[in-house]
Image 1 (spheres, rainbow, N blue to C red):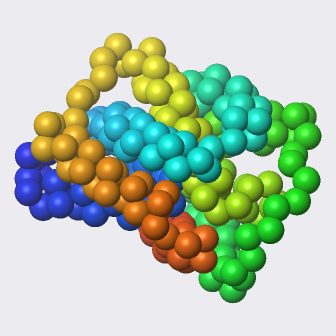
Image 2: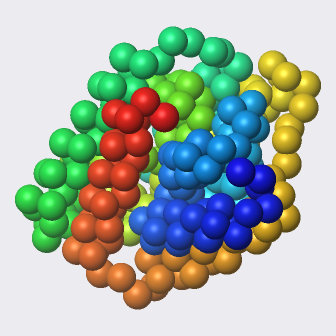
Length: 244
């Protein structure tokens, strides 16, 4: 299917809207719908990352403007993740087993969020060494899977009680932005080109991301955020298990 297809535009809009409510940008969803609708495999990963940059930029601004962003929590994860995302974007590895494992982890994470959606308590922040090592691993995963890594970071922040739901969304949005940019640079270093998404796709992602991030940052409660996040994790986990 051509990138100008109205069905593809609508699907990208829906993915951007849903994912941006929880601070995510939707790369795993874009990859799934573009693959299902017949886009070229060579264009899917970089196009998903470009759409990620659009939506994550909006999400970062909206959650920061609403007062949920925590720089002290963000920077250790990002500092280590960016170079590793570049490496992951450059590498092409047999990742079937990795995707199977990650898919199971995301589905289990979703189940835990649904079982305990009401708590929004925060414990002690991670040490710099823990945050740096975690960020490095998540950055590599983001580059390998063609995502921004927020789909992995947000559950970690919540389950370790390092952030409240909206703080986790804010930190993840900025994390996705820097890792998507780094992954794109890795792609460019490998192929020497960056296929740009069609104008329709970019506008669909922009509109969905604007509406979703505004809703998530200013109107949804932390309980609803966690339930929507669980839905996002189910979608992403199912996509990974399906081999996409």
